[in-house]
Length: 322
Image (cartoon, rainbow, N blue to C red; front, side, top):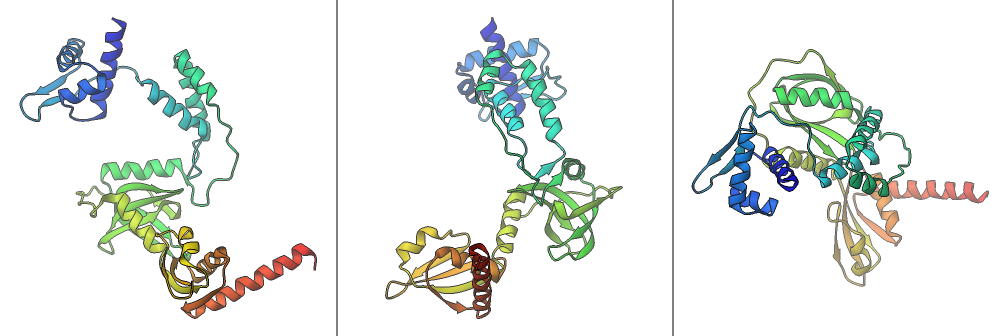
């Protein structure tokens, strides 16, 4: 009986995670036969859970509308995943949730089976304190933006670009996307009549929100791909070509295809094409190769390299007390 009850809870959990399941899929997940799946579905119905079934090719099971769920049920792996996430703390991209995370972890420990509590204690983690990332956003701001996305309500906000330019924007908000420690909002910009992504840490949302709107189809690839392409463009706005006085075998392992490409030339040298946000950032990368080089273009990169070399020399003199 105990094994059957545990299996029913597991079946109910699976039905909540996806809209449709085939009998074969459920049988495979639960390591039982399709016939046992049918019997377990009947038991759930007897307990009052509306499980709909369809027959024929493509048929399967789904949890019907209006189902009243039991208290939160998590399997062993889910409990550990939640507990470890809470214990390890935020990534630095969100502020205002540290105390809430600790409260949630304390409550979760109280209801954990002893076998899981022991496993969690054996995975105890110490987190090095650090300041939130410069691009960190408040949890309440994320929640507010997520709400207007869900409700399909227009959003007005003041926005600051990377150079400090201020503007008032009105958009149809669609998705929040996290890339590293930065949060972005993918939205349809009403004044520009095009898709845009906005860094949430540069937004100051205005209340009340605007009227509801009819959702548009997201850009090809979805919101995450749209943000990814935008970030890639931002980090490759400047390009430079440089002749490195070293063989390609030495340089190639150091080059990431996201920001550079390298080709071999004669006499054991190679040409590298680098992308970056500024010429200064490219000059810094060149220093990391630790080989002689000749700037092909643009000429302005030579001045950046000279400036960095001079700064390094001054810093070395200070360090050595010269």
